[in-house]
Amino acid sequence: MCERPHTPIACQHRSLWPEEHPWREGLPVAWRDQVVAPLDFEIHRDEELAAQRVFGRDADGTPCYYAHAWTMSEPCSDDDEEFYLVATAGESVTAWRLRDERWLVRRVVMGNERCVAPQPFYVFSESMPR
Image (tube, rainbow, N blue to C red):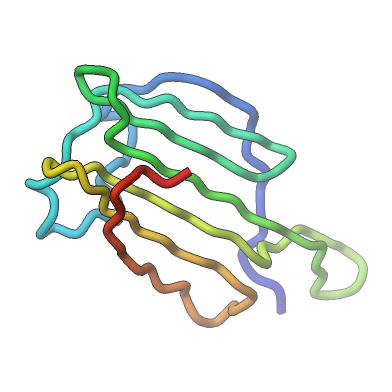
């Protein structure tokens, strides 16, 4: 049985205020006081690639939040008559700039495991992911 049908993301470029974007999602509670909070966001979405990239900036316009996500899909059917797209692979990366200028990076890789949720892992980086 196929799971998680995929809906393409609309093409978009726009700015958001912090209360409109879930930028703290995935951020460990222990690190919340250590991150530089973004004041606005620039979001790029691509429907054809099922991809999204988000940049968050502080008061000086310096990047302090970054996220990207992409998903690959393939046709799937439960009855060989009606087909729909199911996500088969993907990646989600979220990064927060810490007050000491390091970046806390969260990465989640999605494979073809339909019964097991992908597990995030965290690393520190000297630079923002690209």
